[in-house]
Image 1 (cartoon, rainbow, N blue to C red):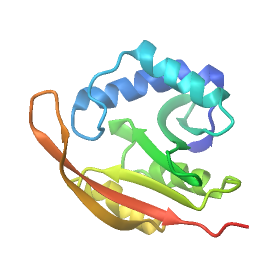
Image 2 (image 1 turned 135 degrees about the vertical axis):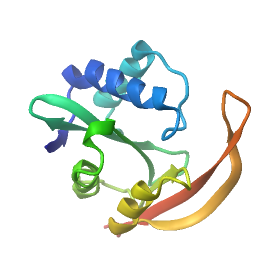
Image 3 (image 1 turned 120 degrees about the vertical axis):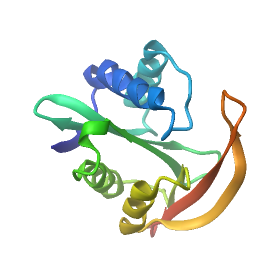
Image 4 (image 1 turned 60 degrees about the vertical axis):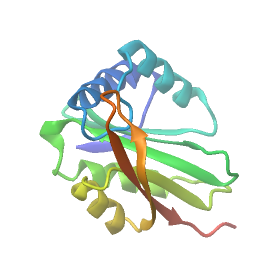
Length: 161
């Protein structure tokens, strides 16, 4: 497996992969999005100077992705990641995280993310990568079925020059 910066040509495969993970209904806050909508988001991220997008590839197949985009707070990026089920637990998440946190992030002092509290594997990875728990948004996300999910807020601080 290899983590690398994503290209415009990766956008359709990333959209199909994320749509597959969305269909699982367990790991991502996104519950409903078409492949076309997701591909458009990925194309925007590839073209935007303030977005960072990474692809996880295995034998020529795109199997995961990590994106970072600006928040409303200057110097803070939000991180999102997905990996297809057969490739989870095989080190790809760490590869994507290492690629993301080592990129030159001019003016960025913090990367934040939200993760479902029952996603213990992801939380363990984030903590191993220097992210700390900052809080819990209790019953924060209303799902399409009407249920509520909490979101654990985690972040990593960086020194700025």
